[in-house]
Every structure is written in C-alpha cells, then in structure tokens.
Length: 234
Image (cartoon, rainbow, N blue to C red):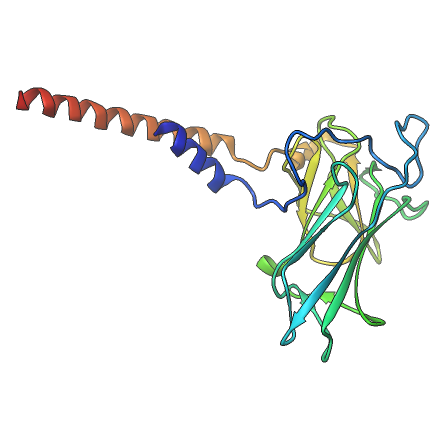
C-alpha cells in the first residue's frame, strides 16, 4: 500500500510531460548538430518536426510532433485551442526547424549548446500565433547534447535579444518549458551557477518524501489499532 501511495504521490507531483519517446529502453543516438563542433560524435543532419493541426469551428485540435532522431531532439505538444487560426482555415501547419546558432545576438547569460529550433505556424501563407497563456500554451521538450549538470535552460529570441524561460528537467538529458511565443528556441548553459536549479528534476522531493513519511506513519497506526482490536476480541 505504501508503494502504491508513493507512486500516486509521484504522479501527482511530477510535471506533465509530452510523449517524446515511442518506447522505453532505446538508447539515444548521438546529438545531431546543424553545424557539428569538432568533438561531435556524428555528422548526420538533424530532422524537422512537422504537424498539420486540424481546425474545427475555429478551434485548433490537440496534436504533438517529434523530430525523427532516436530519441527525438525535440517534441512539441499543442493543447486544444492553443492556436489563433484565421477565419475559414481548416488546418494549420506547425514546424520546428533546426538551424545553427546565430552569430549575433547571442544570449548574454550563457552559451547555446543545442541547435536553435525555429518554431512556426501558418495557415496557407498567413502566420498563426499562440493564444493566451496557461493551459493553452504549447509545451516544448528538447534533448541536450549531453547530461552534464547543472543542466541548460530554455531561452527564446526576442526583438531585444534572448529571454530565459522557466525550465524543468524531465529526463536524464531532456528539458521542458511552456511556449508563450513561437520563434527561435534553444538550450543555453548558463555561465553562472546561480540558477542551476532551473534544470532540476521537476519533482519536489522534499514534499514527496514528507508525504510518503506521513503515509507510512498513518499505515503503521492503522495496523497497530487493527492488531489491538483483534487481541481484545479474542
């Protein structure tokens, strides 16, 4: 019972994750760079994630798209109603296209360690934007080229430079963030360790441990009372 309670607590406290893998136990292939560094383990070209999102009565359907590496270097989840589709549109095409980091501007707080992925959405020739915030924001997962810690954080390009996004670690080398806007996204290893916690596990282990301890104590109390009741009855 304690084990089941612990499992339930873990599921409740863990962040929602998009289905980035098709299976379990398949080892990752080396990271594919658009512009491979000298120490790259492969020169294979990275792939583009593309998805056609149906529009029903002006509301975009829930969809997700993975790149084709093993495991995927990027996965994008689009919740129901996340896209601002133009009137009369029946579908929206969403892409996450890899490209080399720019020469300028670069993040001021660290170094880009992944490919830059250009996220875009179009209906015909018209650009499509994201609706609002919260549950209708897309979720982005990207695989880091390595699992060294402290891990990288997500940043996205703005008109004035790069902006950091709240990042959680959801796998050995996989990181997740909500996407408030489309455009260029990348994983950045910070030059200062002051925010190393941004690449954490995503699970509050203090709360989880405390909850499990309370469950165990409650279970022991119930067992003691059951035994005493049985002894008095006999």
